[in-house]
Image (tube, rainbow, N blue to C red; front, side):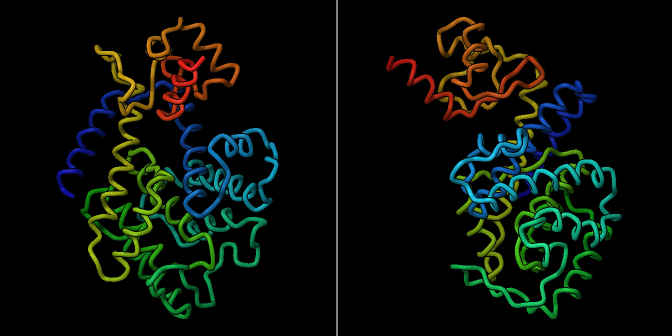
Length: 315
C-alpha cells in the first residue's frame, strides 16, 4: 500500500502546483463529480438509473419512465447530501466532525424514503443478503459509534487517504443504520478526502463486486489489502482526471485504446476524422454524450466514444 500512497502524494503535490484552479474548471468538475458519485453510489446499492438518467433527475427534475419513485428519490437525496458536505462540512477539520454531522448526512440519504429511520441509529438486528458478515448487535451501536468518533476526531499520523479509507470501512462495519450505510460511509470517505485536499473517490459500477467482496473479506477476518486497492485506485483515477484538465496539452495524440477521460475538442475531431465544429454539433445534439469542462476539455466516457466511432464507421 505504501508505494501507492506515495504515488497519490506525488500526484496531489503536482496538482497543488496549479492552485488556484480556474473557477470554471472547479465548477464543472464539481458538477461532474456530483452526478458521477450519485450515479455510482446508488448503482452499487441496486439503483437502476443510468448515468444520463441520474443527471436528468438531479439537474432537470425530469421523471424517468419505468423507474420507481424510490430510485428518483435516491438520486435527488444523494445529490443533496453531497451538496451538504460541500457547503457545510468541507471546511471543518476532521477533529471537528460530529456524530450529528453523520446523522445529518444519513437523514438526507433517506429523506422521504424512510423518514422513521432517517438520521437515527438502528434498534433492530440486520443482515447483509448473501454475506457471511455478522453485524454488531443494535444495543452496541451507540457505544461503537462513540468509539468510532473518538478515533475519527483523534490524533492520527496515517496518510490522509488511508484515514479516509479506514473511516469508511469502520462505519460500514458498525452498520449503524437500518439502510443507507454504504452511501453514508462513501460520503464520509469523500468528505475526508476533500478536507485533505484530494478529489472524491468514485467507486465505479463495474468495481461493485470487487468492492463488496473486499469489504466482506476484511469483515470476516481476512486481509484488507484488496479493499485498500479498490479505494486507492479510485482516488488515483480522480487525481488523473483533475490533472488532465490542468496540465499543458499533451505532445502526442491519444489513441483509441488510451485510458483517457478528458479530451480537447481537437483531439476528438482527430479521432473521429471530422472538423472541431462537427464535434461540437454532435455534442449539442446529444449524439455524442459529453460534458464540457471549462471550455478546454470535454469529458467523454471511453466506452461511449468507442461506440460512437463504431457507429460512424458503420454508416
